[in-house]
Amino acid sequence: MDKNRKIFANKARRSHRTRAKIFGTATTPRIAVFRSNKFVSAQAIDDEKMITLVSAESKKLAKGKKVNKTESAKVTGLELGKLLLEKGIKEGIFDRRSYRYHGRVKALAEALREAGIKI
Image 1: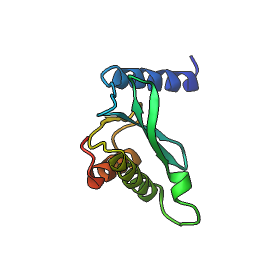
Image 2: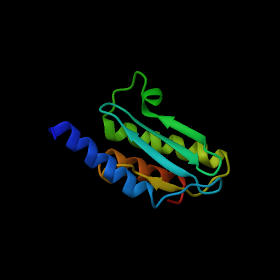
Image 3: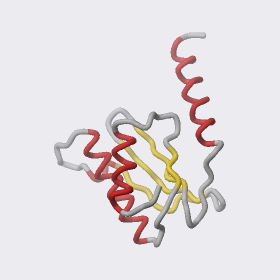
Image 4: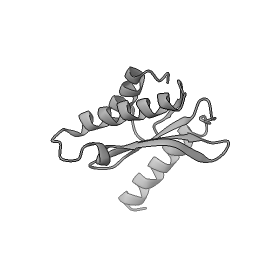
């Protein structure tokens, strides 16, 4: 097995392990995080109805601004928290997928808490 396949298999295994314990509803949606090399995006998902309630992306929020990736993740978390509060949702379940709770993922989660969302 070459190195890239092994890395992908390990990420998939981690993702399935964390996702198996998490299920979002309309009142407590699953907040899924996606992290690329440049940007971060997060969305609140109702797994019962299989719909996305709200989403936020750092690509849209950081247009023309010069901020580092961790700060843009924090801005994304604050924006998502604001959108969730507008919908009347005060708590959620954090789904970090295969990413470690560190750096940008941690900054996004802390910004959600700062915005008033209970995770």
